[in-house]
Length: 435
Ligand code: GDP
Ligand code: GDP
Image (spheres, rainbow, N blue to C red):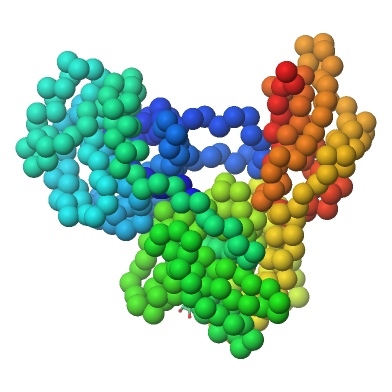
């Protein structure tokens, strides 16, 4: 699990420009999600040998009902609570702005690495613009230019120096399950229901990474690790106040799970934010099950379930492999079925396919439907192999990878799904030039 760095600051200070500079662009990894625009609010990054995830927490908050000051407050609170390090970015071009002082005040006495950055200092000659900022009562601002790179290497060296090290999650035999979703959809009710089932033997165990407390439950012969449950359960008891969705918390549990249960409040209906959360699960390479919760209070006729499933399919096309189940955490309806679905998703998610079989599948797919010519040359697929499981990931060697049309790649992925019986897991297919 990589450390998470929250970048906080007002809009337009240059956060996404900075992200672009320090994140390595992903190679031509194509997965199964046509038409989904990756938002730019989080990126996996690497500096020297250190890997981490950068998140622009402000971008995830809804602004409508929130005055600007409140918006900044929530942004910083979440960053301080949930991230492993915080970068406060200020704008050296526009100078000190309202709230800069408040933001710095809020970050005082935080027991986590906090780095203060003045962006848009495009060269040494502009460092004079820093002078104003010292009146904010801090004497350690890093001048950088996200756009032109000035000061960035020194700053990044410092960032990776103060970051806690990545913690490898120790492997165990349990299937790891994360429960994610918007506030109030019923996550803590569901977890309590699962853990409260008579025949489930439950224990709270420290997560294999810092801060995490997981629950292990035994269902039949099998053990499951529900990751990061302690926080969710406790929250259920404590607060009635409106909770904000914490993207950092969601990422942390998604990064540690095999299968994500994406809980949706079916009574309220499927919302854009539900789909966004599911998109994160997909992004982090998790298996995924949709749970349409509060089914006890949904008005229904014999077609209702089907209509919900269809709407879900339509709105989350990129997750068409994820099964869905209607449940009630309150009454317990169909909660026992979750584990059977999780087992099936996990079985596929951790599948390994022999090289012979995957090559036969690709050959047959090409025979059935030849790729079009590239600049008059024939595309050749030489050899395919599975390079990883969880999720199943394949590499296929081609003479001109960049000439393979996206839709053809999708066709190949679908053929693998069909022939290998992988209809319920994300899979990845990477094309590489044969050298
Ligand atoms: P965000 O809203 O914080 O993500 O800000 P953006 O990254 O979208 O940047 C806002 C504006 O500031 C854009 O017009 C950028 O071109 C500009 N900008 C960002 N970084 C720099 C920089 O280092 N120097 C200068 N001169 N402009 C910058
Ligand atoms: P969380 O914020 O996602 O953890 O949601 P909670 O578990 O705290 O649930 C939010 C509210 O929804 C609480 O009042 C629960 O009692 C209620 N709730 C949760 N699951 C169900 C359900 O299946 N049916 C009904 N009717 N209410 C539910």
